[in-house]
Length: 339
Ligand code: A2P
Image (cartoon, rainbow, N blue to C red; front, side, top):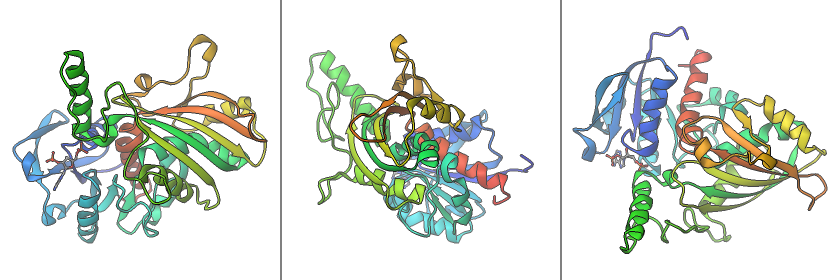
């Protein structure tokens, strides 16, 4: 990259995703000339390491963005709703990991392997999709291009890190409490998460689906630019720390065999096929954790429909599902001279 470096801010830098955004900027040698770490007033006094230097955390305020060229946001929807437009007005390009702007028609919703070009049409804010949507569209895009997907039925098995740092602590504390004969304390989740799972991610809507499930429907349609694709999602929280898994059934317009799907996916950017079930090889969250690829396996015919395929897709929800995807969008803008 021929670049002198950019003034970059990370909003929510002390959180599970924000922290990783800082690490991913360093790992991928993103051209940063100076880094501003922003969080709530509670975090002032803390520092985070970046390229061997301890960078102080500053309080997020309206003036935080003066002179900042790129801001990566991951401090929740309310902060993004308020501060992303403030940053954009100050001339900062915002890549927002929250749900606040994803369905705004003026805001591109981008997964670089799928629709990178959409990022170029931004007017200050670009949205990072929901973690469960990202890994699903990365795995389905090559099949959609080759055989046109008409219908998707997906069930997710989602890690607690998607809820944030306090949810990781809740799982760890509950496990430790139960193993030591104490009562599990529940603060973040509607049920005990240790040794349990529940089909409840985000509030339930009038149609009976949860908000998380409808994100998968609406975001997939927006990213594929296909308002007709039918999606039915069930999203489930499980006691895993890093890595979302998804059981996906698709129905395509043209037939596509498991062998063809495997070939397409082997060539696809950001995908690794691990599919040899007879020797116990298929994706699991512990193998995805800490990596940026989307892992796909258990590819087989779904005999319940005419042109059906079933598969199992796993990715690190806070890497590809959040931090890495955001940094990849920024890299694409740099590559195209737009940053
Ligand atoms: P803080 O650590 O100061 O509370 P997570 O998703 O892991 O829970 O992290 C949420 C992130 O959003 C944290 O970095 C948190 O900072 C930040 N955040 C929460 N509320 C605010 C706020 N009012 N202003 C700025 N940052 C906030």
